[in-house]
Length: 158
Length: 158
DNA sequence: GAGGAAGTACTCGGATATATGTTGTCCGAGTGGAACCGG
DNA sequence: CCGGTTCCACTCGGACAACATATATCCGAGTACTTCCTC
Image (cartoon, rainbow over all chains, first blue to last red; front, side, top):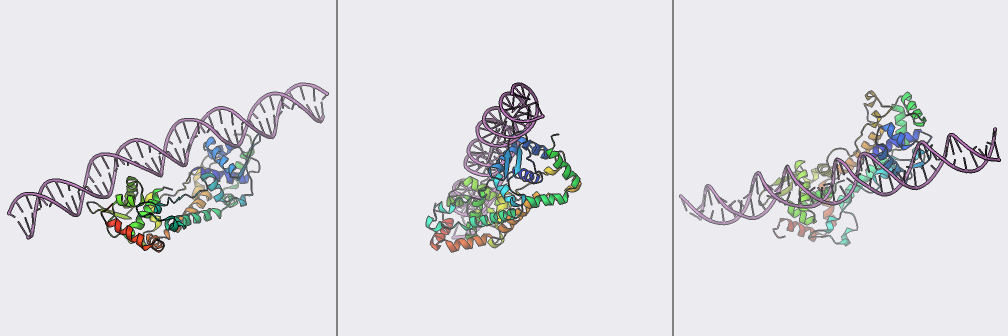
């Protein structure tokens, strides 16, 4: 699991609370992470259509859709790739007793078990949206610090 | 996800059908994979207490417990490590607005969502045993090929 | 013929190189705003 | 005072290295069987 997933999710939560575009550099300062590497993750989110980038002086990143319409799974797949983590190499078709392709229409039970587990994982991530995360943060973080951070996001001072 | 997980699961299914110990080299020939790398996976299974190794002329690997008592999760954790794939780096405690440790008794909602998903993944893998996999294989593979393979496992011919 | 001991062939186990993916970094292309000049 | 134009600072985007983990490999340690010798 790529560590950039965590940063991308935090950025999405932050962006859900900021109405103006936020530059990548500011997001990196807020989380105290490498600006250039965070930029790479944000580019991935941009390619996936989750955030929209605007260039120029007042440019930055902003969410495209409503935070309630973006699931955690969307962000994870955008950064880590949508392909399955387990890939069956069809070892049953190798070796001295290979199964003929005729019998391999269905995936082998091992691949099925792994895929079922990944399906459960995805379903869990799909059931949580960025809005849910932001709501929980609003409940658990003192309002003064939340407001100060949002104010700092739009202000020019570093 | 390590590719060796697939090999380890196949080996466990095979071992559940062979009453004698099977050498690693023979398992590798059966699946047409690198003997030395498969040996590494089998060593991991041995360290985890899933298989038992016996040395000597008629030595090899054998399952320790009943196949119905070994879950797919056990094998996956033995090979890939039991640690969680998502590790929270506590970015909320960094940057210009750090959350004081007083407010960080609970994991942040992002870490909670990721951990919940991993829990669902583990639960799915825990619900399937090696015996289940072997039973499905027995249902879907023609008995003659199955018998020939088991016969080949104990025979000395290559 | 039976018992014991040495030899041997086979096995596993950990320490050792290489390949792929993740982490981190850099510089160029493009755009919006702001300042400046002219009318 | 207003409009147009130039300039510029700021932004993103893709291309480029360094490190970590997964992959693949090798050789040494240990054991059960086999064989041979002795009684």
